[in-house]
Structure formats: structure tokens, C-alpha cells
Image 1 (cartoon, rainbow, N blue to C red):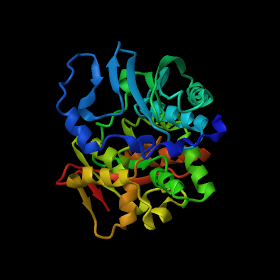
Image 2 (image 1 turned 90 degrees about the vertical axis):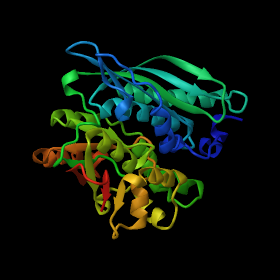
Image 3 (image 1 turned 60 degrees about the horizontal axis):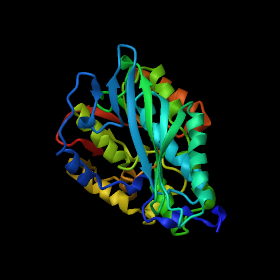
Image 4 (image 1 turned 180 degrees about the vertical axis):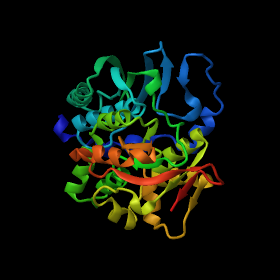
Length: 349
């Protein structure tokens, strides 16, 4: 057997960020852990932000994060690319620059040829190099199916840190990448998706969020998060709770990746969407006119998704123009606004 005979997607039931623990269970576990107390900690687990942040001095803070998951696609090299892109995204979401990374790989040499191992690492290395980051080594254990990702250290100026806790009423919500990755991957398993639409999804997951980071820094955006396994609604809930605000999200304005809208409307909805929706349900108001498939796409688990930014109204058009100036972000869209804290945290309209 060689690497060409291996379809990684067939080795897993849940791949990519949809393999996360259900958010309700995870939140319950994390709430029981003692909070870290240290004067240099700028961001910890309390706000469920994208990474931890530790202030070294007045000029530099460290961003520290990790992310890994089972295969989200068939090809080992592309799996490595997507997993690395996803792990680097946490640093970009906080306005930082990736500096160092360690490979995290679980792989069974008894069940797969070693060439698959090599291609996964090579794919990850290619995206780390693109990010201007350095791989310093890593750790591997025997396990099947494979899992891959990175531990990443980045840097940011303490005064330019972007967090999920700085949303202000009146801010406009901008999403940089379309939704629907989870739906496309589920449809691929069922042979329901067009090849060009699926390839479009694969290519989207490989797009680094460094350009979105650049736009945020250029325009002084102070609040953002990246959209991954808990879906737009799950990550928006964390943003609302961290900032003590409510968010209004316009379902008809959500950017949806090609064919995902049709597939979701036809009932191709992965299990992670239902878990995510169940988690946000107590904090969510859904308007009567919201189409059911759009509600589910708002909860769709994304892998290596886009950035959700809170942008001051006077900067919205400039931010949108900058994002749409490159062909990787042409679907960047206004998807809602930040409201003063009210009865519910999220209003899907």
C-alpha cells in the first residue's frame, strides 16, 4: 500500500473542527478548573478566547495556542495544510504574528504507509513557511485514525491586542470567509456535492487569516474571533458573553460557500450543527422568518474558517473594501451588529 491508496476522510466519522467535544460539555469541564492568577496574563481561559496571552514587557506579549484534529479531507498533504492553517489562525485572530510552532501528530505506522506521515508534515510545513513561522520540532504518538495540528507561539504589541471581549454596541459585524464547510464535507461523504464546489471548500480552508489580521491592525479593530468548530453562533455567543453585549446576526446576509446553501436546504446537515445549536439555544432568539437551513448553516462547524470582526461604523466601508480587494476575500460581508446587553445574547434575524 502507498499514500495514493489512502483516503484519509474514510478513516473518520467526524473530521476537522467538527471533532471537538460538544461545546456544552466542554464549557462545564472548563468552569471547574481553577483560574490562573498572574499580573502578566492578559487573556486566559475565562473568556474562551482564541489563545492565551502573556505580557513579557511594554513592547511584546506572547500569544500561545494549540489546535489539532482528525482528517478533514482525503489527501494527506492537504490535510497537513488545512490543520496548520487552522492552528495559525488563532494567532491572527488576536492581531498577532506567528513566531514558532511545534508539530503534534498521532499516526499509526502499522495501519498506514510512512509516506502518508511524511506528506501530512510536508503540508503543514508549507503553510507554516508561508506564514513566516518556524517549525522547531514536535511530538508523535502511535494512534489511529491520524490527528495533526500545531502548538504555536506568536507575538503582538500589548496595546494592539485583539480579543473577543472588546465588542461595543454600535459595532458592525464583518465575516471574512463564507460558511458551509461542514455541510460540504458531509456531502462529500455521501457523494452529493459537485467536485468543483468541494474543491472550492478545500481551497478556502487553506487560506491563511493573515490578510484579515493585516486589515484589522490597519484599521484599529480591537475585537474579533475566528470561526471554527462551534460555528458562527457558538463563537458569537462567546464574544457576546465576554463583552457583556448582545449580537444581532442577519441570516439572509450570511456569506455561504458554493452549493452549501442548496445542500443544507436539502437536509444535508452534519451532527455537529445540531450540537452547536443545542449549546446556544438557551441564549438564542430566532426570528420566525429565518429559514431553517440558514439557522443550521449559522451553527455549521467550520474548519479553518474566517474572522468575525467587530468594526466601528465609521471604518466599515474601508475594512470591507480592503478585504474584498484580494480574490481570497471577495465574499467578506456585513452579517450583523453589536447591541447593548439584553435578554438574549444572540438574535438571529
